[in-house]
Length: 146
Image 1 (cartoon, rainbow, N blue to C red):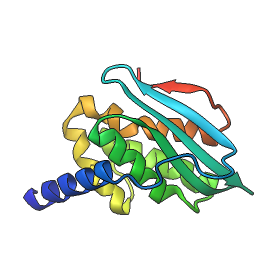
Image 2 (cartoon, rainbow, N blue to C red):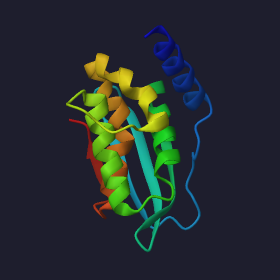
Image 3 (cartoon, rainbow, N blue to C red):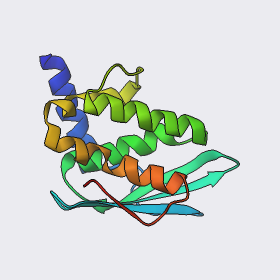
């Protein structure tokens, strides 16, 4: 358990300090904002959907280390996925961090499984995912974790 906790901390720190896919990508054709009123995390997720595939995804915003790291890891995991695969990944990720039943192997995203030990932080970890889901489904606008 100690090794997992160390890995969790290392990955969170790395992705928080050096977020991947930060900024607005060229040709983004969908976007949605996310806001966590409890802690003030704000994120905008941009994506370029081409023929039902997430050709590019990125984010901008500010928030806690977990929120930023989760958004960064999310963008890496979703690039190249079909819309259906992305929806499935969203559901599996949410199930994992909420600790609600079993979930599939999520690869690198597994490092965020420790969030379930801190219920108040689940909203931080899922904020970018909810914004991505809104953008993917053409809902745009703003989503809140409350």
